[in-house]
Image (spheres, rainbow, N blue to C red):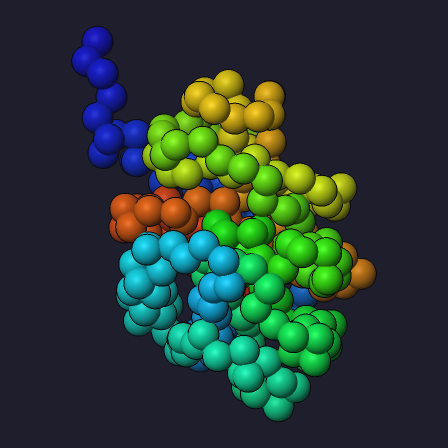
Length: 251
């Protein structure tokens, strides 16, 4: 039997995502029944400020979000200006994305504004290095919301991913895979990674790599993929972004 090609693997992954999306819709409707209009007309703020390591793939992520915005009918605003994090300015947006943000990027007043924003019913989509953001211990609310802290990673390589939705098929994906610390007990795994399927992880067994998390009514969606430019060209990653945005908006 010939070895599976990348396109065949990708096709299996996309079919699996249909199951994940269906499960997410049910979760979202149960939690937010009054909001079911999708992303049409939504306003999304994408923050990519870095106060630590800066990912070269940020422009690729921004490009993917622009294309998704055209397809889904929402508007997207990109910023690296922490001054956007005030009650008045955040109030213009239906959800916020942390796209490969790193380090201590918001001051205490900006952090408080973002907490009020999320408490008012808006959500956060965190991509890849969002778990390597505000990890200095000065903003424990954010660390609890995003669901875990970045700990370490080996070299970029292929790994086995296992969706949690019943009937979904496992697939393989190449990216930079994080080990995490201080994981939230309230995380709801959508996709797990098999730590034994690649080399260099400090963990064993299976662990969430795409998840939702809710803390005291505040909600976040996290995607562990997204280190490389190639990640953002993948329909798998784009499907995760779409569903993450729907969850953050409250659809």
